[in-house]
Length: 100
Image (tube, rainbow, N blue to C red):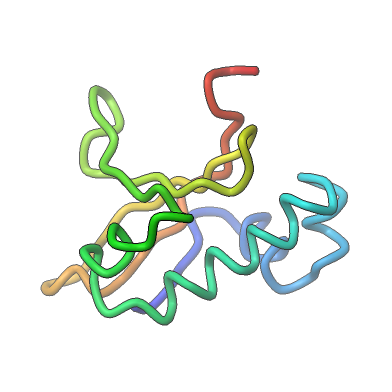
């Protein structure tokens, strides 16, 4: 998949590891980069959903059409799919799951 970022800060955290550590902490920063690399290598959403460690799932309600993958027990990466064949993953945000 092709990966794009909704805001520049998300892209900077991916490209500049120190910014990710500052934003999310050491463990979450490592996993953030790994998750995006995994999304880049995936052919489609079904491939991501088959990887148990990601816990990739579609979101509901006002986030319908978006997907989430686990970063840590505290953080999750939210993305949406775009393009004619849903080949573009747009990184929407890193959120604190369950508002903790």
